[in-house]
Amino acid sequence: MAAPMLQGSSGGCALLVVQGVRCGVRRAWRTASTACRHARDTGSLLWEGVVGLEVHAQINSASKLFSSSQVKFAAPPNSTVSFFDASLPGTLPTLNKRCIEAAVMTGLALNCTINKKSLFDRKHYFYADLPAGYQITQQRLPIAVNGLLTYRYPAGKKLNDMVTKCVRIKQIQLEQDSGKSLHDDSRRQTLIDLNRAGIGLMEVVMEPDMTCGEEAAAAVRELQLILQSLGTSLANMSEGQLRVDANISVHHPGEPYGVRTEVKNINSARFLSRAIDYEMKRQTEILNSGGVILNETRAFDYKLGATIPMRDKEGKQDYRFMPEPNLPPLILYDTKTLPNNVDASQVINIDLIKEMLPELPSVTRERLVEQYGILPEHSFVLVNEDGLKDYFETVARMTRVDPKKIIGWIIKDLLGYLRQENLTIKQSMITPTSLAELVTLLENRVISSSAAQQVFQELCKGVNKTPTQIVEEKNLGLLDRRQLEDICQKIVDEHSVEVAAIGQGNLKVLNKLIGLVQKASRGRTDPALVRTILEEKVLKSKGQ
Image (cartoon, rainbow, N blue to C red; front, side, top):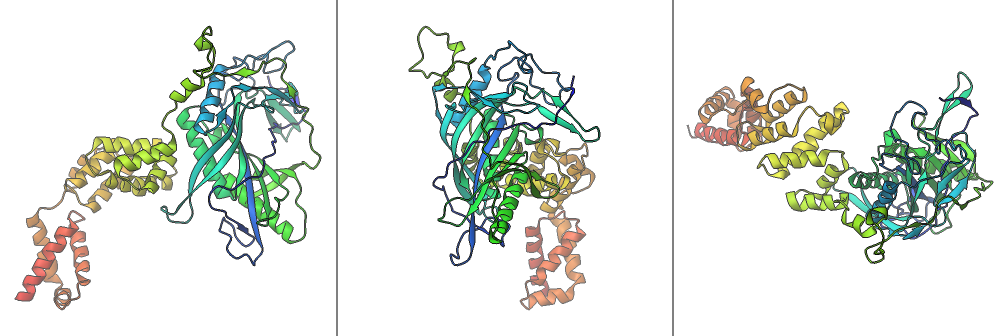
């Protein structure tokens, strides 16, 4: 049961990141700007942002890193806490094999070198939600090092204007999460929930190769997609399964890096971008006015759209790292080094995990372009929008319509509808079966494009009908040529002035007549056929 305790906050690993060579396009922060842009005018006062990230990903495991306690989101307070999680005397850690395998697989996907020997350490700091007074982490020798993450993001408003960059991964380390402090201001007390204490985390430390919030958000989104495709983390930021600490500084290009601030526990890619851009703007304004940047920890208040100070970091905290005495070195093997007399189920084989790697997001994008002939920017949207790729491929399998025609319906119409209604693809009223049937009706010239839009709008309302049933009930099928000729003749007879103008060479007026035919037929016509019939009738009228 949660009990009143002194106020505390969960700690995190504050690792210094080292400076290095940039990968891709260098971008600069201009004080009058609110976004990344290229540094062009060397005569003006330019500030370039430097951003490094520490991403804490909760491992997708049924139990915690060092105990058998269940991992369950939104469980009643202190209901999934073992004696070890509560740090009762005499309890010892038992390493979770699943967590090790997840870290190795993540390291391989991020092009890391997997250390066959890694060590666990105690990092001492004192908060109410850290009952042991230390965190078990990997400070000296982490499980994976020296990786690389490639990501893309739009450089402009147009989707096809994409920039490809990469960020170096310094290391991936296994560590345990802390508990959670619940502050009750009205009663002036803090309650402690230890359900989260001991849950396995992978801390992915990215080098400061990014220069603005947009880049950082794109890198985190790509990492999130990779983790989800691997299944090593659910990476749901809204549930705290992916939390980001951003280290931010500004400097003049060519000069040493400035003093950095750390913005802690950001749980949204959009908030990450806003926090970084705000912090860079704040620092440039201070420096331009002759002020000094403090080395401090800050938090992002999304309501204010600003970062606020949490604590000063000028006095370096001594975490008193020491080897974890209750855990031996973590030894991993590959096929060549695996001893003959060892039970394979009791060890971690790096090569076996490498063989189990699924298709990663970057490979998926390339496959979509090659298999379906769609544009690279369209494959980017399909992969980056949760569930959209599976939706597209399901529709493509259910119809013989050109995938390049399907992609327009999905990205423009379906995605537009979902965003307008603030829905996910899983919440869509339009199933892949319905969309496949709709595009097939259009392809087979059963309905016109405008009628297809009417059917689509009906499907958005959640009606329990198929597109074919909607077409029949609303009489949206294409008119035959005889019916269409009758309507066109009526329009020509009623608009002699326009017909005369067309006869004199003003072909733009023909579009007006086409629109009138479409209106009279309630969109049940093929515009190309309408144009052909009207041209014939106008020519015939001119001959008379």
